[in-house]
Structure formats: structure tokens, C-alpha cells
Image 1 (cartoon, rainbow, N blue to C red):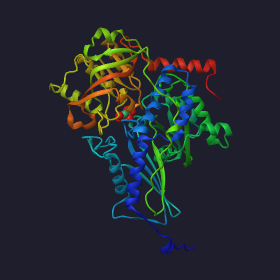
Image 2 (image 1 turned 30 degrees about the vertical axis):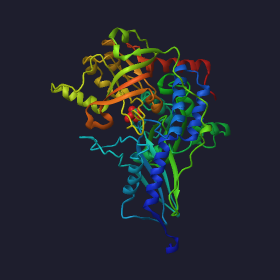
Image 3 (image 1 turned 60 degrees about the vertical axis):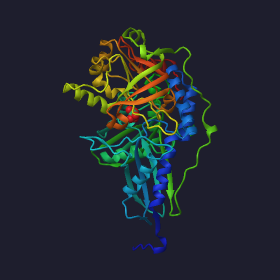
Image 4 (image 1 turned 30 degrees about the horizontal axis):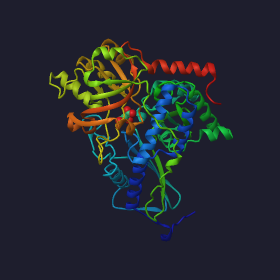
Amino acid sequence: MTVTISENDIIAIAEGDIIESVADALQYISYFHPMDYIRALGEAYEKEQGPAAKDAIAQILTNSRMCAEGHRPICQDTGIVTVIVKWGQQCVLDSHRSLQEVIDEGVRRAYLHPENKLRASILADPAFTRVNTRDNTPSVVHLEMVPGDKVSFDVAAKGGGSENKTKFKMMNPSDNIVDWVLEMVPQMGAGWCPPGMLGIGIGGTAEKAMVLAKESLMGAIDMAQLKERGPQNDIERLRIEIFDKVNALGIGAQGLGGLATILDVKIMDYPTHAASKPVAMIPNCAATRHAHFTLNGEGPVFLEAPKLDEWPKVEWAPDSAAKRVNLDELTPEVVAGWKAGDRLLLNGKMLTGRDAAHKRIADMLAKGEELPVSFKGRMIYYVGPVDPVGEEIVGPAGPTTATRMDKFMDMMLEQGLLGCVGKAERGPAATQAIAKHKSAYLMAVGGAAYLVARAIKGSKVVGFEDLGMEAIYEFEVSDFPVTVAVDSTGENVHTSAPLVWKKKIAEEGLLPA
Ligand SMILES: O=C(O)C[C@H](O)C(=O)O
């Protein structure tokens, strides 16, 4: 059979339509959470019984609404752009550039937008020099040709912290997927910023399973509806089983112990080889960001803004019992007095630094070179802020995953550092180093970056300026909210709280069916 497509059936997709639509979608998702996520998080907030987890969800919801109003990013990590394109075979790209280049032009425009500049997080030459490309390009594009006369785009901006927790296993055909997920999720810790979603890809080959897992995260959260109508196939049954069993682990928002670790589980599958059962799992963080549009040759698509009254009426305010701390007069004795779980409001000056700065500090110390700034008697905040716009002192500036700085903890404390601020759990070596130096690790809420940035009243670069957002800044903060996550005795909230809540959930049957 011969199929001929007549010239009249060919649709030209102008490069400008793609560029404008991609740029619009990326700006949109930088400040508007998907409504399905906000509704599900609002319900989780109502049901949450873990006090620290409830406070964290309140911060995330309050931050979300502030970002929707202020058109500034939900999280300082404005992500790596992933685009899944389903290209209708009757369409032609009207451009001399490749589809990758055209999409990247949209990314560039979105990330350099003067009124809502996003953070450039992409580094070229990843194994060696790791140089920031300064415009967040290139994106990661997956292209599939499909029958039809339209082109659909799923556009996501995926945070590094959640992407880092990706798991993959080439299972034996008889291995149990649920058992594996339940083994992996506790190992993922809190660096992926729960509550979020799990995307699971089953089958195909190794790389196919990964793409399926990523694509599954583009779907709307519908677990409540699925449970209400009841599962109609094995995949839906599997989704519910994983959802219930993961939440029964008690990890909770930000790993602080509670009922809501995930708001949904998405699964996509594909036929596989008789010898194989590849399974990939990718978590999506609290700053879940994805948008969808279809081009048909009739111009760009601009997404409609959600209604602000759809956000739950949650207004986070600092705990009235929180202790105010003057960082400018901080002493080892004051730090040693903090207990795990204490809520603090930091005031005064603190330094910043994250992955690249720590690596450079380690290299300089190894060569006997003088550091650009002294850490003696100081606190360090693990952060890579968004550049300010307009009247802002600093753009959104939430914490990055402290666990990545574990291997530098002892080295930094040896420099006289008094403590550090970040998000997620610390491993055994870092916890021991903190206890040895009678120091403390304080956590701020990941995914509340715009809210947290309001507490930053002054900002200047004091070292490693060439590192861009990874430079060392000095921030002046006022009532910057943190919780003591590891105290000077080595008591570690992220180790103890999920265990308490796992037991409580099991004994009191707390999770809804
Ligand atoms: O890069 C960041 O700012 C945060 C990162 O996404 C993380 O969660 O650790």
C-alpha cells in the first residue's frame, strides 16, 4: 500500500512559534505550580499530623502563592529543561536550525527574561572544568515521530536535587518491584524535597525505562480520584500499593517525619526482553514544574494563568516559640546549647557556599593557599541564589542539599566554622564531625525559596565571583527560619523522626485507605 501525503496536508511549524511557546511555558512553570499539585498538597496539609512536616508544607504552600503573585521562581533551582516532543509526521520545521537549537533559543529567552531572570544551572564539560553556560542551555530533548498534523510539547524544568535521587535496576524477571521501591525510597533521603511524586518506568531497555519514568512525571496528580473510582488494571493496582507503602515509611515532608512523603506514583511501561526487567524511578520535588502545549501551525501558544483563589488559605508565619539568634555574636557555647528540633530565627551575617566553592576551598587548602574569606566563628548557608531583579536584594534563595557537602564538613569545621544551614539529611561521617566539633546543622525548607529570600536583607559576593551562583556571598539576614537538624551531641532529626512516624503510622493506622 502506498500512502501519499499531498502538499496540502503539510503543516509548517515556524521556529518562532516554538521559541515563543517554550519561553512562555518555562516562565510560567517557574512561578505557577500545577494546580493538581497545589490541590493535593493542600489536602496533605489538612491531614498532616507531624508538626515539623506540617510547618514545612505550610512554608511550601505560602511560598507557592507568593511566587504566583510575584511572578518569581518557586525554587532557586530553576532546573534543567527537559522537553518531550511528539512530532506529527505531516509537520515540517520551518527553520534552518535544528529542533534542539530552536528549543534552546526558547530556553535562553526564558532564563534571561529581564523581569523574571531564572538561575543558570547548566555546566558544560561536566567531568572536568564544569563551566556554567550562563543561559541554562542546552536542554534535554526527546523526540518521537507520531502520525498527525500537530506537534505536542511536554516542557519540564527539573531540579537537580530530585534528579540526583534517580534509581535504576536491571531486575531479574521474577524480582518484586514494590520491594525494590521500598528499599530505595529510604536511601533517597530528603534531598529530593518531598512531598512530591515518584515516576516509574518499567520495561524496554535501560534508557527506555529512564525516559518512561521521566515522561510519567508529566502527568497530573490523580491518586485521590484513582482511589475513589478503584483500580482497573495491574498498573493502577501497583500505583496504589506503592503509594500506600511509601507513605507508611513515615519519611514525611522534607524528611521530618509525617504522613505525606508522596502525593502520587506514576508508572509507564513498555515490552521488554525475556531476560530483563529494567525499572527506573525518578522522584519529582516539591517544586514540580511541567507544562504542555500543542502547535498546529497557527501561531505560538501562551498558557492561561491559574486563579489565585484556588490556592489553599495557608499563611505560614514563624513559630512564636522560635529562638532568635544573633549570628554576629555567635559563640561555640550558644551553638552547643541548641537541641535537635529547636526552631531558630537567624539574624545577622552568614556566608554562603555550595558544591563548587567547597571543592575549590579543598583544593586551595591542599596547596596551602589563603582562602578569600575566613570561616572562623561564622555560619555557612549552602545556597546558589537566583540573581535579583528590580528592587530585590537577592532572588529566591532556598537551601541546597547539605548531604553533598558531607565530605567537606570536617575540613570546614577545622577552619573554625561554627555551623551550617542547608536542607536534607547528613550522613554518619558529617554527623560525627558535627558532634566532634560541638557544631550544629540547621535546616531550612527546600521549595520555599522566595519566602526564605524575604529574610535576606543584604547580599554581596566575597569570594570566587567567577563561580556565578556558586560564589561565596555574605548575606545579612533577619529572622531567617531554620530548625536544628543535627545538634552538637550528634542527635539527627532526619534519622530519628521518620522512624518515630513509621511506628506511629503502623500502630495507629494513621494513613487513609
Ligand atoms: O541547586 C540547588 O539550588 C538545589 C538542588 O536542586 C538541590 O535540591 O540540592
